Length: 233
Image (spheres, rainbow, N blue to C red):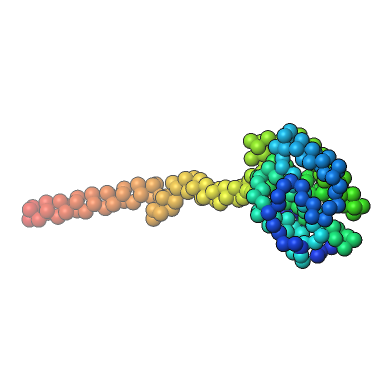
């Protein structure tokens, strides 16, 4: 799961399972507005397959807002295609937390930008209904431009290895390159290495053999000469 950071002061009914897509313990959204919000949620689910959930409570019981949202999403069984907005509205101020399914095709950074730049101003002005409608509308737009899951798989991986995974792979191949270089060097210098292992070169060997042949021949002739001299006597 991906838990988005929150804005506002810290102050919870504990995290709990949500009974529906729109939960309003504080009754800050009127009956007519609830219908409008639910219709926007239904349209988002039908057209884009995204389940938007919103919960309004008086406070988060001293639990960090992002933790509260994440735990509530878990208890409610929300999945990859779901988004949760949790808002605490008590004490004349507000605090919000949000959660996006880990396998969501929505760009998490873009969702965070929508929350910070467009939803938070509505919350700050205590326009609770507008905040949810704004989020629903912007998720609809993001879903229209989001890559398909097949296309997302690549960038998501790049994004996971960073392309450093690419670079990591490069680094790995750097290690492989080290081995490759060593192997290439061994191949290139192999004959020289064998030559350097011999005590002399090929030419020197021929000269030495020639000298030995001359010495052996001279010894043989000298031996025969002595034999002839001896027999003559």
